[in-house]
Image (cartoon, rainbow, N blue to C red; front, side, top):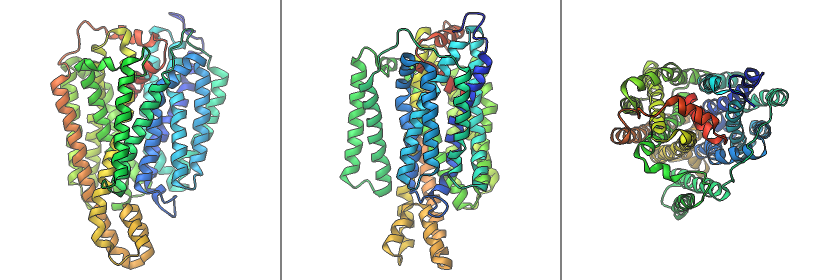
Length: 534
């Protein structure tokens, strides 16, 4: 246990081990984006459709977000190191299954298991940090932890591109296995066990309602985008999802130990900041989903080249996020967050003008501006969240923020992916005349399918590639406009509800101390991840 002014004698070694455990989780998620095009290829990959690729992303994100609170409670009750080891083992096993998946369904299931493992890893790492570091050094230690998140975001696309340049698509998952193995051994040797002597009760009903509700809602959105919204099953799934989420809210209002404290949203400063973060990640992650196909198919870049073209987004965050906190102190959270969301809106709207031959320099500029904007959204939103809560509840707000960021990203991939599918299918339909029914279905399903059909047709397939490119770019424009509108809504919310200045009576150091001292790890998760994403 940490003692004031002392801490665990091996605390910095323990931190290094925890950083390795965290880095593999963050790195894997960013590596996957570059690999989507290859996974969709029926020869080089497993022929996953666009909807199946969306599920490969969202299966991980939704399980991770939905079980984040539950994993923290289990760590309190049964031991943080024990839950961390279980999470690492499950993440490594699921990575191995993902690498050798033979069908899209197997990959989706393995990704969901990876999300379950990640939910055990992330809260446990921060809980252990708070246990082995005293309050004086704890902020610095969490800063190192957060830097690992930023590092993973920055190097993920290039790492994925490099692996795909020399190995098969499964290598982006298989690389996790040796790292996880080393991590498990080091955790066993170095990391001490800790638990809460008075743990909270697990809100099992709340966890089930939230996860099943989100899955039903996302299923309806993705299935509607792939096969059309004119079928009753789509609206039934959406209705079930909305109904279960409404039931979840009702349950959380009545239970004495809720997973999500609904009462926090009665303060407009808190709810506006949460909305800003959720909407920003909704728009941002949904956009990154279609960019990988644009770069590798429409523009013909290799996975490594595509990864390099995506790095300005991460580099901008690494450069500007550390400076945004000072900007918040000088100009206030409302001004900084408004500028950040405005930059995100401008960048996303700019994608609506990207064509088949757009200069690469413009693409680099747009991704850089988007990253710069995102770097100035989370810190001021965090400032508003913390200033709206008493110090002893700061960690709770942090956990809610992290959950809404994950859910916002998942819904962004689902909704914008549905828009992309629907517009593409409509745009390419005229070019499918004369094809067999199986070829028509494959080409209409996604641009990857159209490229596969065109390759089988030989020289005669050139017109299909041209039509698919034009249809995809048009669909990308619609998705970009939709994401820009979402970001603009977030800007309006910020202007109306975020405070111009943080509460001058709100002691930030007191918040950090209170958050670090909270017994349950889930509250600490959000704050740490937020710092890392800045």
